[in-house]
Length: 526
Image 1 (cartoon, rainbow, N blue to C red):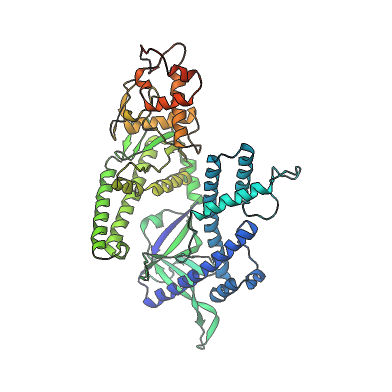
Image 2 (tube, rainbow, N blue to C red):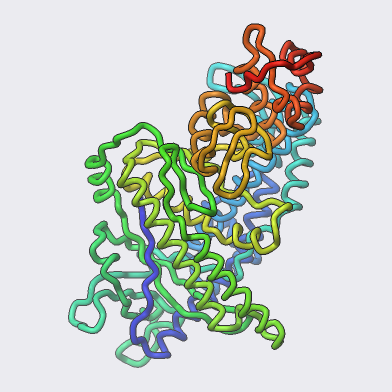
């Protein structure tokens, strides 16, 4: 449970800033060589390695060159950071591998073996791979042809994604090369950080020593950071913000606070009032609950204003032949937009937690861009703060112990929460929902929130299923609800293209009831 705050440097002379930039450039020059070495190890052994011996470094020309430039201690710090980013990248590609195998037409036995190889991250491993191996069981050997297939699939997955690049790396520096603490005698800054520079320290005799000199810089603080509590860690991060193609950015220091004690106290004090809270993320209102609460009603209008200001300035700059990121005004407007999103999302979620006090939050998967929407709307949706929402939910989990789950929202906005009938025409507008089968009228976002709540017990919406599969399950659930006994299905249900598609796919009693010779009654509401 850690929190990271970016603290600007306060009233530092240009010489210290230049010294910090030299440290930053030294890490960035060494990082690509470190990454290249780790990729070589990955393809040879099937894994990255944080622990590389001095003898192995000496055998590598690129590692020897980097070690001579930044030293052994910084090499170890850099390796841990590079390997951490590469492992995160590979975990995401493992998810892509799993999706590709799940959608493939291979037989079940081969699929199981491929998923086992994926789980073990053994795509490029040279030694034999066994399924179910333990201390008492020898396990089942995975055949070479399956492993070759797994290797080919993973190579194809990697080819569709750009590898992490480290030429703009912001290095983490631990206590071997950095110190941080409150000011002892200085009064103009409450906190100081000392970072070992690249130049040797000069002794009293005027000669350089073997150790590097320490760059002491004051940091600006703010009330939220000072009053939040927690223990400040001994590791800092050197960050350059706003750099662009030769133009240097602002140097700030990231300070890490260990919040385990204060967050433990807040978790003990938090008493949930309900077991679960389902949230629908929308545009007319940021969040809707099954109880009818609509919070953040004006946020989309504010997003449109920010988008107009950003897009308008970008067009004017491009006409002048200026890249938008080179404009201070453009960067300021983007920063203002991000600040608005973070503040508004935090305010709304804090209010919801204060009102409902749930133990668990269910929220739709936050990626709802679609090719049918306008270019501008898709752009706004792309900027709508999905990452900020996830970060805030993770913060609530650590702060109060409130867990959260992202569920599959497919067709939740078109399905009636009263009778279960699903049709595209049910949703009349962004805010109005009117069921064509039972006549149920409700706010569209509240209706979707209720579907997310009830859908979890009907079928697994958290599974990685396709949109077509989700529609089939939704239709089947509705049909099973209304086709009991001798009931017939309404003509409105029969007229829905979703149900005609289901009738062609189902060879069951439900399919036969979808094709009655004469429809004389409307009992779609059950």
